[in-house]
Image (cartoon, rainbow, N blue to C red; front, side, top):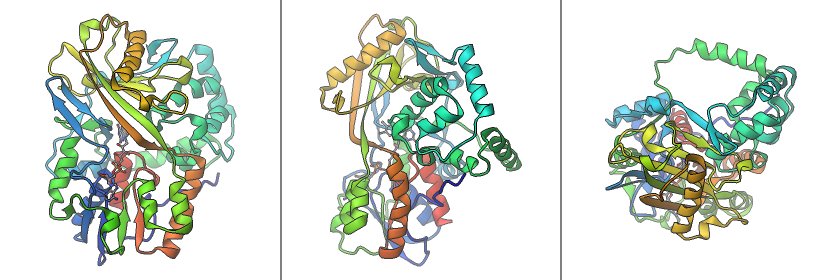
Length: 428
Ligand SMILES: Cc1cc2nc3c(=O)[nH]c(=O)nc-3n(C[C@H](O)[C@H](O)[C@H](O)COP(=O)(O)OP(=O)(O)OC[C@H]3O[C@@H](n4cnc5c(N)ncnc54)[C@H](O)[C@@H]3O)c2cc1C
């Protein structure tokens, strides 16, 4: 196949060590980039509009335990491992009890939601199908894996990461690794074997899986902010800084659009975001009759529940609740024109989540406490349009705005791990 793949999710001109950079935004993208610029001995400053670093990421700690406002962890990679070592941060791997991951089918959490006949249909599809030039993740799923797997496994999985349905997501944009693999052969099993050979040739001692820190994700943003303290100016709006030379904009697309005129402004204003709500509910363990330990559960659209998925926080990481008698669950919900969840009161959102928890685990009582974090522009929509626009934006920047680069969760890597890998690679 012939999928175009971005070399780096930092769009625009290459890194040049002798330049004096200004990073706009001290969310995780700006902080990670700052870390690697400092490591390379480059000259830079970070301007952050608010009075704190971290953007979407922060951790709330109270008498019930630890609650994250957005990401609860990240997948480890060698760059994140190296960064944590340098910052003297102790990584906390997920517990063994988090190995079990559930998918919901007919209101029940199952490790394998597929029936025997459906598994056979999936294998048959995989063996006998050839790839096309897929536009969406749904086309990929239906063609190479069949409808049952796509609906019961892929759709809830992608909703959990991208907060969007498969037909809304670009195949090469949201499944870049698989698109790269299919560039080697349009026959997926063969492409996978070729890729596996390459992977086994790379020796790695890396610990894998989801990681966080004893006191949550804020340990990471706080340590990064402290490490970069001499470079960060708080309560400084990037739009007011005067010079627009050697800027790296790590602000959301609709903020970054203000730095441009014409086509680039339009392209940035076309980046759509899904409004996302993270709702953490604290229950007494004894009040959830059917609860099972695990990482969490993902919920397909066909189940007609309110949540896209629910994380079982204290099964993933120890000390997320003050004692073992409590359970902390975080549900992720997506607001749309129909349900308008984002406009509802916190207590109503808690009731929506409680209804799901009750269906899944037979709750005998309401939660003891709850926290709701609403993100109007929570997760960028990795649509086929956005995927095409990455290449246009990259080209326009290189031609017309050599002094400005774009980087953030909408430029090709949505996860903390992905952004860290890209920041490290860019600085080289
Ligand atoms: C509910 C939820 C759960 C998630 N879970 C995970 C997970 O488990 N693992 C994972 O890897 N990822 C997860 N993500 C994704 C990840 O958290 C985000 O992609 C990431 O935090 C975004 O970082 P960012 O720096 O790109 O943007 P932001 O965090 O939005 O940072 C942008 C920064 O720019 C600043 N800013 C804005 N305007 C200006 C201006 N004019 N001048 C100066 N500064 C400005 C803002 O104040 C902010 O600090 C999750 C996201 C959500 C919403």
